[in-house]
Image (cartoon, rainbow, N blue to C red; front, side, top):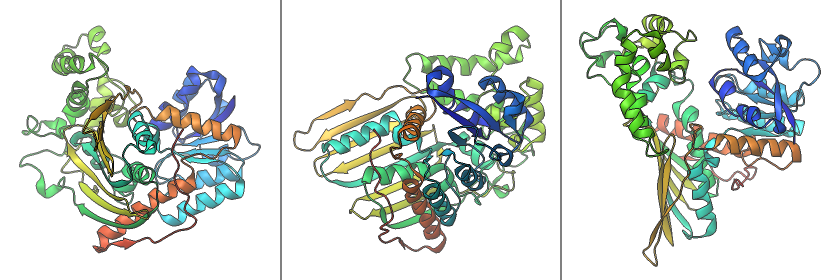
Length: 464
């Protein structure tokens, strides 16, 4: 199997996810073109994927004009720009790997499903957590019958306090015009549908507004944290600590139990790094620089001076209470009754001590519960009759999504090569989006939303 692809959007996902597999396993194919309006990103992408200047275009319109360049397109644009390039790619004859969310309303989701069917092309949505080491194993346990008939599922996405401030207060998704539940957790709603094995029947949801607002700003806090905030030693959202000292990032990694040694190593680095960076010894401090996420989102100028400038002049350096145009909620709960009788509760919240997902599934014969962290995870399975509990081994993952990125991309390539339907097709993914839209309506109206039976909804199948 050797397929060619193009990438639309050369940001973090387009540059770092999925296509990097082709650099390690070139027999799977290669990327032959990229489209991005930012010249710097195009140049960086071209260097990594060995593209000529003619293969780097400023927009998807130019990319999809004329003869088809490749077998598939990876659409990794911003959340508000998924629909049009996807439909254009399909009409131009490309298969599509589409970053979530598919679209911001149900009508546009339907447009993508219809366009995929009309073009007879694969559209796979990047629900990577189905393929993560934890959830793939949990589905195997469910499918084995070890839990009996499923009764309830409890799932929570616990977003670390600093991650919330970065992405949903200071970041690109700080406006509820792109609902937090849809943008962040259509993954989780897809997982619930997949694990339950049924479309949803009814949905209820509640929202708590964000506390990070001007009226809650600590007295004397400046507009920009780097200006010398009197609360820097106690405020968990301090931008200097987040982006220069990396205190919360390294603190999260310090809690990792796997791979062995990472936790203690990160803890040591957290303690010594600020002093090393302040030493101004170029050869030494250079080795301790960090230009990966979340710092990569703050500035493209990868120098200490460039980061300082960004923290003084952009919203990334703003006091988290004074960003001003952020209105994403701080937490949301969603209760779902599925058509097969399974009940599920999902919580999305923003004040966790570390980023992690927690899941529990209870059935008539047994229970399973576990956690997924950025690198590691665990799963326990208990049998009601014997009273025994076994611990399932969950391998360490290095992609930030529990090990799910590469299996998803491999399955997409297989679907393109063989015509076998993707388990995360646009038609399947539309169900998780339908639940998200119903939850937003429920939270706004304080009503239970009855979705009813939709005969055109495809029952989700387990990933192989």
